[in-house]
Amino acid sequence: MATDPTLDPALRCWVPSAHAEGTDFPIQNLPLGCFVADGAAHVGVAIGDQVLDLRAARDGGHLDGLPAATAEALGQGPLNALFACGRAALTALRGRVSVLLRADTPAGVRGQGDAARLLRPMREVTMQLPCAVGDYTDFYASIDHATNVGSMFRPDQPLLPNYRHVPIGYHGRSSSLIPTGTPVRRPHGQLAARPEGPPTFGASARMDYELEVGAFIAGGNPLGTPIPLREAEGHIAGLVLVNDWSARDIQSWEYQPLGPFLAKNFATTVSPWVVTLDALAPFRAPARARAADEPAPLPYLQDRGNAAAGAVGITLEVWLRTASMRARGVGPERLSHGGFTTMYWTLAQLLAHHASNGCNLRPGDLLASGTVSGPERTSRGCLLELAWRGAEPVTLASTGETRSFLADGDEVILRGWCEAPGAVRIGFGECRGMLVAADPGEEA
Ligand code: CA
Image 1 (cartoon, rainbow, N blue to C red):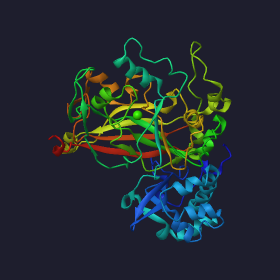
Image 2: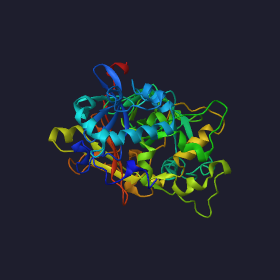
Image 3: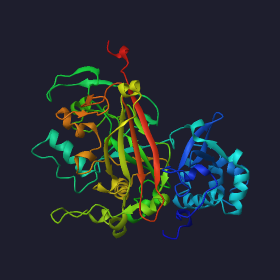
Image 4: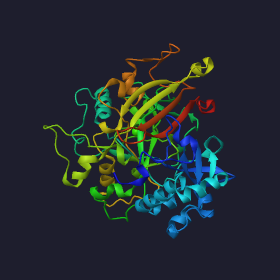
C-alpha cells in the first residue's frame, strides 16, 4: 500500500481546487459518483470543486487501453455496471484517472488541454444515488449504540446474549434510498404511548437521524457461494455516509418480534461520492479489540488481516441547522463527533456474515453499518442517545432551542473525513437532508 503511486502525498494535480486547504477531494481521493447533466446520468470522479466526466474522458481518448467491460461501463451512470467489473478493475481505473489528473505526466498535460470537455463544476451538476441499489441491508455494529439503546428499553439486560457472536442486521428498503439534499417528509404511523397499547395513527412525534457508514458492493457472489472473510474487502467498492432516518415512536411499537419495518423505510439518505477502499488504505486501523472476558468470534468471522487492519479511521460528525438558525443567518451546529474505529464488527465481517449462508450480494448493493456511536457522550450517533430518550434534551447554543427529537425544518448534515501522518487528508463530502412537515392530508 505504501507503494501505491495514487496515494503519494507529493502528487500535483492540474485542477487548482484539488489543492485547496481542507478540500475533501484531493487527487489522492478520486471518489466515484453518478451525476446528471444534459438529461443523462454520467459516471464521475470528484476532484477539488470539479467533477471529471469519465465518459468524456473515455470518448476523448484519455483512457484508451482499459478493459472493454470497464470502458463500456463508463458510458452511462449509475455505477452498477462499473462495480460489476470488480474491485481490481476499479483499482486499475483509479490508476489511470490519477495519471490523467497529474500535472507532471504527458497524459495529464493532454488532459489539461482538454479540461473544458472533461470537467464540470460540482455546483452545476446534480448528484444521484451512486447506484441503482438492488438490496440494502442495515446492521447494528456499534456495541456502544446497542448498549445505550438496549439500556433504555431493557435496563436489566441492555445487550442481548447474541450480540458478541452474531452481527445483527435486517433487510432494509432500497426504493426509499434518496440522494443527499432530498427533503424527508415526517411519516405517519401507528403510535402507542404505552408498550401494551392501544395505538393511534398519526404523524411521528419522535423523529431521529442515525449516523452510519455504508459500503457499496463490487463484484459479488453467486447464490449459494459464501465469501470468506479474508476475501470480503475484495467485494467492497467503497464507502459513503448514510442517514438512516428513524421514527422512534413507530419503531418502539412495531419492532417486536421481527425488527424495524415502517419506522425506517420511509427515507434513507446516502452521500453521493463513493470513497474507494484504495483511497482509504492509509487510514486503516486495527479492529476493535475484545476484552479478555468477551467471547472470540466464531472461526468464519476471524482473520488475522481483519484483526490487524479491518477498521477504517474515519472521523464522523453530525451537524444540525434548524429553521430558526436559517432565519437568523447562523450556520449549523455540531451535535456529535466520533470515529468509525469503535465499531464492534468490521465491514468485512458484516459482508462475510451476510454471505455466510450463501446469500448472494450483487454489484451496487448497499450494506450500512448501523448507528456509529462511541463510548463518549459526545460521540453518540443519534438523538435518541444524545438526549437519552428525551430525558436530557440537547440545547443549541446559537438559538437556545432544545431538541429531544427532530423538529420540522431541521436539516441534518453528516460529514466524514480521514487524516493520518504521511497521508493527504481526504473527505466524504456531505450527507444532507431536511425534515419537512407531515402531509396534513393523511391525518383524516
Ligand atoms: Ca440504522
